[in-house]
Each structure stands twice: as structure tokens, then as C-alpha cells.
Image (cartoon, rainbow, N blue to C red; front, side, top):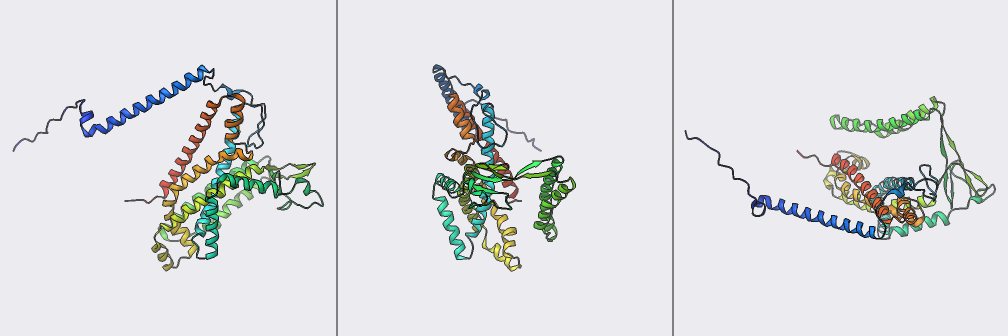
Length: 404
């Protein structure tokens, strides 16, 4: 029997980096990366040198100097004696607030509009078409101005809420809508309120566990649980029970007219409302088209098969159509969330103090550190966009089609 010996391995030669197809592409990529890095180093060095010649070396110590200005909308305490770093933090929180609330409202409106555009009712479908086309083909800044004008010009003055005046509060005299903003009750946290909040958070976690269990049970046995009513009970009942057991530790501070304006409660400024609604309505029009195209991408045979099995239309949409459409909807939906977050920088048009107005506006004007401020501002939007993309990609991975 003849001995089988492995052929000798060819030794590596430097010429293979250019003439061997196995290594040539890698060589080109490495050389291109090195050239790009050298170009960036040259640009940065040139910028730093020119700024130093003008007496403007790059420093970030200005963040710890006194800000010297006030911020009208605050999620955390802030005064003019605080630092520019805290002012930037307040602006960041304001930006995240309008971005998160905007994404939620835009998704709700967009899904409803997208589904209704496919309605067999001619009037409903045409109304949704007009809404989508009007919002998409008008610049966002115009919608911000329109909503802001409505909130400031079409709402009453605070003095009109006096006894015998032409305006009155709504929701059992707890909410006042004026040209200076919307005044709502403010929670007052007493002893034991932390337990109530903890029970409420645990209830929300229990709702997610319940929905996963119900879906798994339906897949295994075909039996359906009343998930909506059970989730509704979990959302309210445990927190209400803890609220009364702990002796009602959470009370409300209602706004009341005092002098020329309302006192007490929480003032939601018109600038925030205008930005939030305009961003939500504008983005929802794009989301509606994404949802509509995702639903149309699902084979019509899926709907016909569901109807043949006797499944109601709303259950068909909830259990069969939308779960399959999500695989088409989620990727472009990520882009709309990113656009909404970055479009929130238009807040300066109506005086809403977001990070663009604080760090990228007043702070730069006062300190003269425009390069450092814009670098920090760009870094914030970059990190925020990457976080949103990462979270949505994780969700996209959980709903995409599982292949064998």
C-alpha cells in the first residue's frame, strides 16, 4: 500500500500581498485605512495649530464656570448660579423627554393612520391619505409654528379663568389650558410613596411576563387568555391596593389662579407642547406609510386563511398580519426615530430649552468655545442615535423570521 503524504505548504512571500488574490483586498483595505487615519490626524493637527495661533486652544474647563442664565423648562433643579455642565445636562434631559414622548405618540398615531389607510371605508381611507400627504409634504418647522400659534393665540388668558370669566378649568377643575401653557396637578410624595411606586413598576414587569406566558401557551395549546383585561387589572389594581394600604401617601397639588397667573401644580409650557405635537404628527405620517407598506407586504392569502378559520378581522390584524409585517416595518422605523430625535433641535424656533439651545447656543455665545460646544453637541447626538439603533436592532432580531 503506497504511503500518502501531504503536499508541502507554500511559504508566505511579501509579493503575495500584491499579486495573490487571497491577500490583495486585505492589503488595499489596510493601506486605505492608514491613509484615512493620516488625513484625519493632519486635519486635526492643522485645526489645533490654527486655533492656538488665534489664542483659542481647545479646552473644556468652561463647563465648570457659572452659567449665568435661566432655563424655563427643567426636569432637575437649576439656577443661574449653576455651571454650564449642569445647564447642558438640563438641556439633554429636555431633549430626551421630547424625543421619547415624541416616538411614543408618533408610533401610536402612525400605526393607526397606516391601518386606517387600508380601510374599506372610502371616507376614512381618503381622510387618512390627505393627512399623510399634507404632513409629509410640508416642512416640519411650519408645523411647529402652526401648533405654537394655536397654543398661544387660540387659548384664553389666565385672567379669563377668574370667577365669572369666559373660561373654566377642565377635568374636575384640575387642568387649565392657557396661552402661557397647560397647568396640571403635581404629585406630592409622602411617607410610603416609594412602596406604591415600586408596586406599580412590578405590576408593569408582571404585564410583560403575562404577555409572554400567554403567547407561549397559545402556541403550545391554542388556548387564548384575556390578556387585555388581565393586563389592565395588573396595571391599576396592585398600585391602588398599595395606595390605600399605605394610607394614601401620594397627594396632588392642584393649580389655582393667584394674581395674574396660576400657582401650584406643574406648568407644561406651550413651547414643549408645540414641539412635541409637531414632531409626533410629522413623523407619524412617515410611520403610517411604513406600516401600510409592511401590511401590504404580507400575502393576502394569510388574511383569507384567517377569515376561513373564523378569526375576527381585529384578531387577524393583531395576531397574524402585524406580527409578520413587523419584519418589514422595524428597519425603516428605526430611521424615523433617529430623525425625530435629531429634528428636536428645531426647538430653538419656539424657545424650548433643549441641548441645542443650552450647550449649543447660550453656552457657546457666552464662553466663545464654539468648537468645543459643537463637538460635545455632536457627540451627544451620536451616542443617542447609536443607543436608539442598538435597542431597536435588538427588538428587530427578536421579531425577524427564524430560519432553520
